[in-house]
Image (cartoon, rainbow, N blue to C red; front, side, top):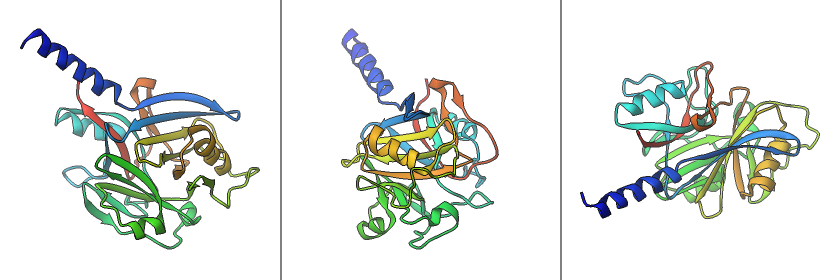
Length: 246
């Protein structure tokens, strides 16, 4: 290979490295959060539920181990929506174009039923958070999709049932997307917060028009660059950024 060829390869690898999920710890309104942002046009964002043998992955390390067999690695991950005791998704779930669970348009259990809820849809070159009824109407062709709830931010407004003095405090995680579907921003609180505080983070600090709650209590993050490899009892759906192994 010529020197120019090596330089092109180096620049290409540099661009790939720069496009991976960027995570940082922030403090907003007196609470601490970890925020990870990806570029939907550059980064490979995938959903994971079961391995090739049909077993639930359950842990970030299990996903990373499976990817390593194909010369890939997990560079960022987060739990991605509510699930039943058997780890199956409560709501709509699509993985690699295959619908595993249908859309649930009505109220469901727990926070899922704090309507409106929503769907995260990963498509070629963009990723969007939809309110569920808008998702049904739009019928986008998602490579990956996961339904959860409640919506945190809906067209720039906080969920109408969030109270500034709400007393339900939990570690919470969720995702927001920009209007053009290029910015995908994940956040997890590093201390217990209420829904209002968490929604305000997405609306006012992150600055996205739509954001979706993933979960509380079981919220976990995989961000090796920050030394985060959260571990605990088995998860259901997992969302993560995949990159070539070093």
